[in-house]
Length: 213
Image 1 (spheres, helix red, strand yellow):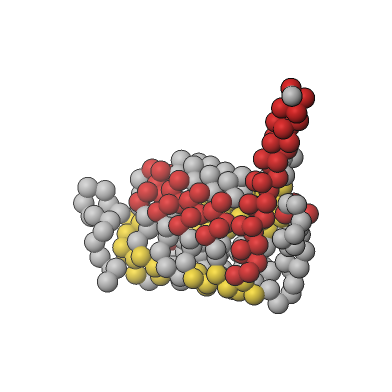
Image 2 (tube, one colour):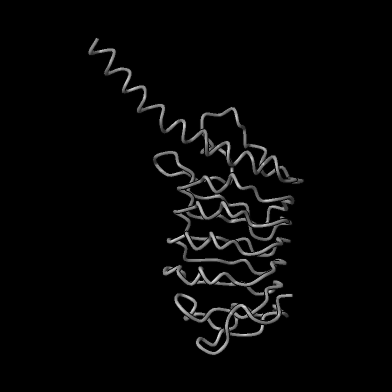
């Protein structure tokens, strides 16, 4: 019986990474189903494979966990999907210069390993999710060149590791933060937002006044 018990535990340990890999494959395949792909760049994304690490434009680590998604300038159109928020080991989400539309899913706040969020030059709409403030490892956030609206969430100033921020060329409104990690960014990060009224003057002007009607 001892041998069978050992074998059972070994099989369980082997199956756990496979289950995680399959769930990551399911999350990525949800994106494939949600977008139009005229150049067939996602043709290799076969959901019947054990894990997505052999798919083009997907990079995995030594544990077969997805760490990069490189689909910049791939002529994709359609919507982002909340399932991508399940990719807990993802470090680089590169979906810039496509024709993606609709909102940024609040579930992206679950990408706890994310270092770079590059969604610039798409047709994204809606507000910037405050849940992105949970991305404690984030260094690069480039959301410029979309049609994002609403106020800039003040929670984002808690992103202590943020080095590059570009929210320019959207339709954001109100004022922009000047505290926390945002203290290192100048007005260039916020250019070409016609309804954005300038920096928040702490102690004088509340961020929730002006230009958001």
